[in-house]
Picture: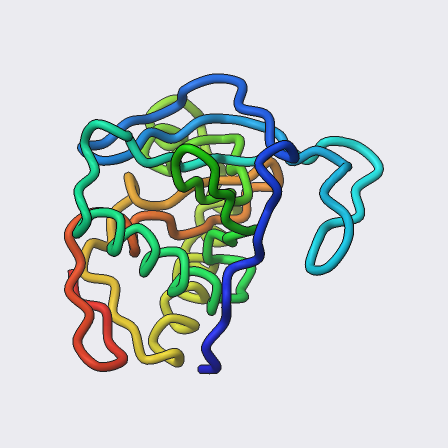
Amino acid sequence: MAKATPRQIKPRSIRTLEKIGSGQFACVYRGELLSDNVGAGGFNLSKPLPVAIKSMKADAAGEAEIKDFIAEAALMAQFNHSNILRLLGVSVDDTIKLVMELATKGSLQHLLQTTAVSQPMQLQMVIDVAAGMQYLENCGFIHRDLATRNVLVSETCVLSWVQMLFGNAIVLGCRLIM
């Protein structure tokens, strides 16, 4: 897999709307990528794009955490598959922010607990999970926490892996071991 550099997103081009999650070193917000982020490596949007924004907590991040956060962005930038959460870019102002596609339906765990899911949809979910895992394996990565809480569901019920790069990860050569 070729190395990729995360796209730079101008800080003024993202709007943070509401907090949707939190961890020890970062918070995740629902937000928008605005249409003024054009130019070299930019987007050409006719209207704001809904996104998830993972922002480092200024008071909780030391040098090691910042390096891990940057490494996470560099790793995520390499992936390009419909069943792997896509990093749209990185924005840096007073803190580092990862701007990612927004999976509006939340986790697969939540969906299964709150919604009656038909057998054909369940089969499609299994296929989506398998496709995402096959892609990661083909890229030389292992996901060691295969669980419904780590799968996000989009508006069209496409499943995307999110937790692969979050949390305590050890990178060994070209394999990610959680």
